[in-house]
Length: 408
Image 1 (cartoon, rainbow, N blue to C red):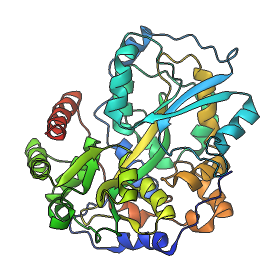
Image 2: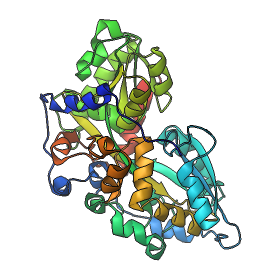
Image 3: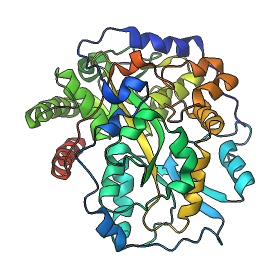
Image 4: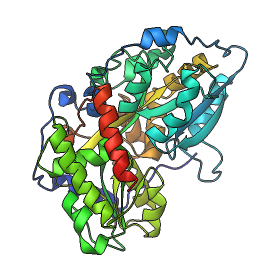
């Protein structure tokens, strides 16, 4: 079992970032009043489940869980705990297998939502097995997958622990309120990560995109809502309520930074290696990645931009073609035991979606139990921003424009 991460003094000092006054800040209410974290998911109300039933009816997979005691799980990198003494062993997955007899084929092959979805979409549309029983997508992509009918429904009786322990605000996800197709895996915040060995701290989007000493040493996220949300906020606009003109203005700012050579590249998870080596000085980064990097190098810091932080959730879905849906549901339910959730959160350092996990974390590591980037307070959540709900047409148009800038 991996020991919980011990926070260095600089890691504890990450909380100071939240004390900086935001020049443009939107106070979130409603779903956040309970102190939980599903804003990104909760804002997707315009997407709905249109077409899901008809599409799903055309692709009904036979479940072999009873005779084939296994599950194939595709996830993002560093999203399940690893044994420090044996990098090939994942303690919580090993415990699940010991408890249930179900073997888990675990693969870290998701680096970007669009990239991964592009690899499996044609097969799913043709009702062909993608050889995966569980995949994890960010909320906006999860909503799209559900809308297209590419996710199996999840019997609530198989995930009773999920329904009992999921954080209250996550119940506000209008694209899947009853968790009929998706289960929150982790949530997180998007801000800046800076390697202070090679550059001074960065506190605004304009600083990130124009400061001379950072030219050619900046990466930004391939995830359109993350990058464009921060750029829209840098214009004094609300990422949750922007116009096409606002988007175009923010995209023009991004395009100028790309054309000038200021941005080194757009990246998925791979930015962490460049940041750790110092090849990249600053990045639009995810909170859990930054905390993990900081645990190994105290000079790498996560910074809340003055414009505010973006927030999101990653959700686990069972593909419509999965052969072991019941086994996959059992695995998801297992991770909603607060003690298991705390063990996972102690390693991945993302925002935990499980009620009761904070109390269990206090038994593992009292400092982590109080950490704002794992268990955010209401005050912290008041400084986060969510990306606007998009219709299918808006999503296609905005993503096409963003992809064009990535290809410059």
